[in-house]
Image (cartoon, rainbow, N blue to C red):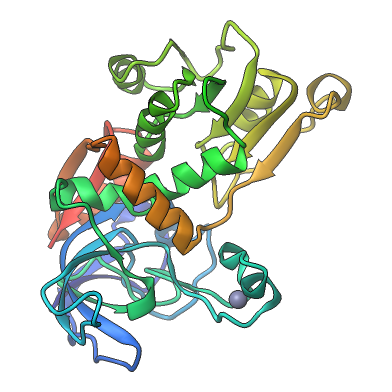
Length: 330
Ligand SMILES: [Zn+2]
Ligand SMILES: [Zn+2]
């Protein structure tokens, strides 16, 4: 099969992904085999390909927002031919303290799709049968793919920020994840304030009904109840913190931050403001979000790249050149 393979992580401008033919995955016990119909591109893929996340294997096929059709070893619930999604958490051990406390997102030994096991930048991908999700029929493959990490983890960010109906919520950065979160926030009657770099991202936020849109350095005109940051930048986290009312929460939706700069505790964190990271996702988050997405008819904006252009897709995500999400179709 054709796949995009990473052997030596480095800057995306040097085209680290090699597109070549490899053996089709062997079916292991507990897994299903998927024919990949589409695979969303996530900023985490960029962190893997550029080496900000340390390599887990000598060779890896990235991609963890897989829309696939089961072509071998279906289950009774999801037989052969079913269209399913695979996300970032490819499996957990089920036995560690976190798994036993219903916090499988924090599992001590998880597998990560497209990082510790091969992912979806390929014609076929394996997946654990208990970590695949049926997808809403109303969505085509390109629309379903970005829901699987950008959507689910964006939704988890709203939970971590403890967003309540009708609140004022800030979104700092407006890429694939935020453009889906805004739809959920509107369904919850929240006012949404967006600070982001790039004129086209600001236009998209305005067209999706943001109450206020500003540049990355502009503070929203009101104090926020909640804020979610999506940029891999500690400066953005501090800007979000500075926009909170007392008792407000910033949820940091990033697997990697450049650093956290020094900031003034007395003015920015005192007053029981909170700063929390968002880590991975649970299967419950996935199922709940996919249900809400179907109910509110959430349709992501997707820009399609062929598998041959996987490097270009990641470069476009890096430079914020895409409105909405990038999706690779093998
Ligand atoms: Zn565990
Ligand atoms: Zn992701």
